[in-house]
Length: 324
Image (cartoon, rainbow, N blue to C red):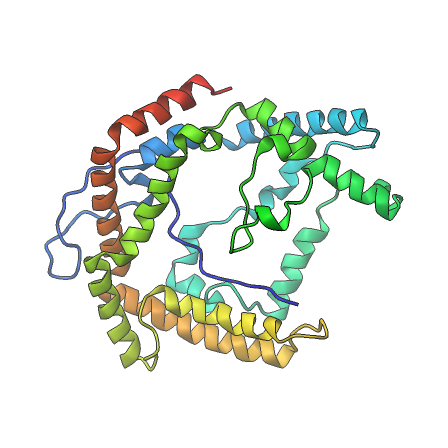
């Protein structure tokens, strides 16, 4: 059994636009403004692409989708009861909290949980109910295959998969959910061939950030701090968290009998995780890593907007036109 875990890449951020002063934010660099990751230069455009609505709006949309899915499935000869999607709201993720010293001291990166934490998490899942479980369990193997294909569309073939196992999603091939979500949300810019180049350029923008000389210098300062703390193998800040995921990946890659890690293994992994995460946190504080990385990101985004202003304006216009 293989479970591959990795650190997520830098995400596109949502919020209002903010102008960057351009000053260095490393200690002694003269920077005084604290940058807000939710107010990056590109965030104004992200809000236009993806929308900026409250929880009630999304709950209403989810309900509309579920009702359409039920009608679609019934038309194809299957039973389907709309699922209450609001029960997943208890899984809201507070990223800011996970970056505090208090949270990190108790949770590390949140990978290896204590037995009590795992039981609490499992209890949350146990509270989730799907009224379709009983019906699905009554289906034969062939009926079940047809059911899931009707609900989510056919599984992609080997030829349609990318090297990393991902594939290009299309709502037309997404079964009743794909059709229903498109009907409720309307045409999305990221589904349009004409906008694929600009979205690919956005993805490359954040890849370029990691290669920027300023980031390399920052990572070198962070790595030196980590080496002083006894962690000399890390070259980039993301290496610290990735080492914890790699520890689990190695277990699952070599796991042939389907067994889970023992309590002793988990306890050992957790101790390593807590120590690594705290050293990482302190070195990020010492090098002002988060703010300096944001300063690089903001500057690259500002230049990106200058270079792609026309395409971004077209994206905004398309998104505004197709909002529902």
